[in-house]
Image (cartoon, rainbow, N blue to C red; front, top):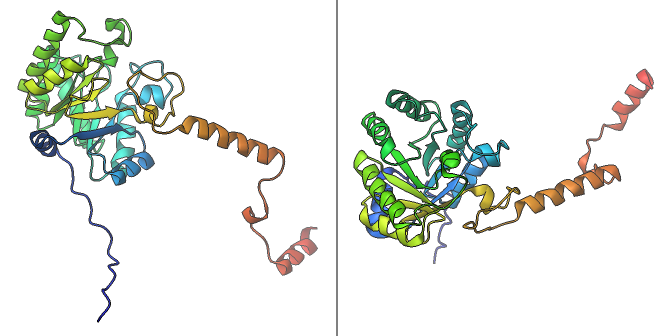
Length: 293
């Protein structure tokens, strides 16, 4: 009996996730996964793990750049991080978050800035916040051939208007408006909608009323998918943790311990040890010592 040959070929590359994949997953009742990334190694690890989509979120302003909120984030900062992520992830659907004042001034400016995410950022789609007041901009962006994800509920760029990071849609009047906004965004051409910090029953209702997928964050299990800010998931962001976050690691604590261990080893001269240094041939050393010693 001959032995079965062992395959040495690399595993097949994962098929590229698209907006059509999103719709098909909703139709089949399959859950969509999305995480945020802001750099090459994180995006690479996520892509290998098999996440459906990666959002280069304006949350980078808080968790990477140290701003108090997302409002100071600029287009240039977003595009810089988008390019890094696009170099690391080749299969996930890549979505760039349009920052504050990049789409609010005019429809023309919104469309132009959305295009920059695809032209200069390597993204497959963009996301912007807001409901009916953004319908014209969304239609223009979609008409330009750019896929767009909506964002309803707690919209962090409107934090001052909302009176802080507060859950939305908790009254019948507010909930009805969110349902209407979701239908408007669907009609305007969004391929998906993020629902953030809204009651679980409301998010489930919206998910059933619209044909496009919903991605929940603090919106319960009734959505068509889930997203978390990676720095929250990994416990890398130490300022605060939203109630809806599940921590899957304690990277902040591990990093702090590693940094402390390094400082202690250097100060005690345990590092660098013999195995960490480069040696010089003795004959060459003797030559040098005769010249300069």
